Image (tube, rainbow, N blue to C red; front, side):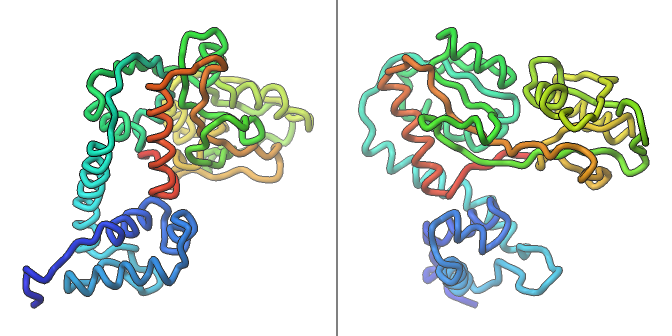
Length: 296
């Protein structure tokens, strides 16, 4: 048993452990952090030696984290957050002002929520007013000058040079295994409402190959679309993180969907030091962790 006074939780090692969870493995974590795989493995091994227990399973087919690793991850997130907040608090400047910020529903359940909470604690004189809308609505609000910035989805080919890229994700055609695609005629389509750019792509560009979709279900929430797919009501376009074990990815017979990218996009005329500070903090977080993540 290692003496308690000799144990240490090094921030860099905890950050590596957290990145492994975020990115799904040592190799991806190393790429995201800009380190070699051996460097990340060394940080974890040093942490394990300090604590006197294994944090990762190293056998094929085993869960990624041991019980001790899972326990430590919860603390690691809080320790890293407090560490980074403490450093920021020592270098902060007095900020005051307002930001009108747009968010999509899924980004409210992401790392961004933690960043916004910390920003509020560090800059209590800043008022951040948020509006949660679908991405197409947020784009229109930006164009009309109703928002200073929006955190939203765009197709990868629509990313602008001025956008801050947060994370990328795949889009898939999916169905329940028991739902059979018709040999001819229209395919039953489970769609978000007409404010969804997935739907626009599917009904316009997505049918260039002669595929006809019949919209039989409309819903503004991902939960509703997921439930309809699981009930075998038709096919849908869903983000990779929304896929479930009872879903089947459709390939070959439908046009391949474009990749998705989550971005911070400013209004064209938005020049605001408060907004600059918030975007800079989000960018710093991406560099520290090699990207952000969304809760499932």
